[in-house]
Length: 291
Ligand SMILES: Nc1nc2c(ncn2[C@@H]2O[C@H](COP(=O)(O)OP(=O)(O)O)[C@@H](O)[C@H]2O)c(=O)[nH]1
Ligand SMILES: [Mg+2]
Ligand SMILES: [Zn+2]
Image (cartoon, protein in one colour):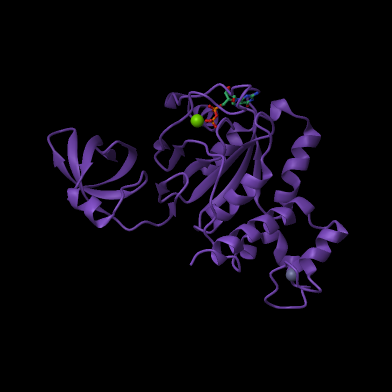
């Protein structure tokens, strides 16, 4: 049976691409009964019907899976956050970094709309993340700056845009490949986010080796890692943690904590630690009220 990749999903139909083109498929009824959802990015087997239709008969095992946006098999996430309009949202970025890294997907931070802010503001925004070892790129689609660097970094990958709505994800997608014709939204002054924005996840092939998925933005992101694992997704904590008195130190209220010392000494940004603490408390609270 032929295999293909789900490029988009819309109300019960799946557009499945293979070498011959794209077919509009339905999923087999048993999927729903077994609670199997077909995601964009899924590799599937399908039974062709005529020239342009078919039935998805099997979802092949996923390499990765993201809940928000819902997509399978991406190996890279472009965390798209605007420097301004909307304001650079560190807490959401910190959440996205945890969500993506914990699914074994490589994060790349893309700061957009750099034309709207100063060099200092950009540096302030990205330095803590560069120090933490994350790849960061600065882009202005309007000024035509930094787009090639994004093309280079995604080459050979299946990448998805992750970030708040209005951050410029679709605009960046169009800049990467003008043929895509992605819908872009005006950022409404009142809401501070985009209108007419992207509503579906959709995968596009940029060249034979490279895929990129546009996705709707979000303003909230739930973290599913356990509280005692959270520290593993803050790579900037690893080095100062070597000086914690306890090997299992969670960097919360233990004495002689190297991470908290680093914050006090200014070697670790207080905002990063504050993000960790608020995420930690939130996860703890959920764990305690679970039963
Ligand atoms: N100043 C400026 N505005 C941008 C840039 N990129 C996108 N925008 C604007 O930001 C708004 C939202 O863009 P869109 O791509 O729809 O964001 P999305 O919701 O993340 O897909 C639109 O009005 C774009 O014109 C940029 O580089 N500079
Ligand atoms: Mg969009
Ligand atoms: Zn510690």
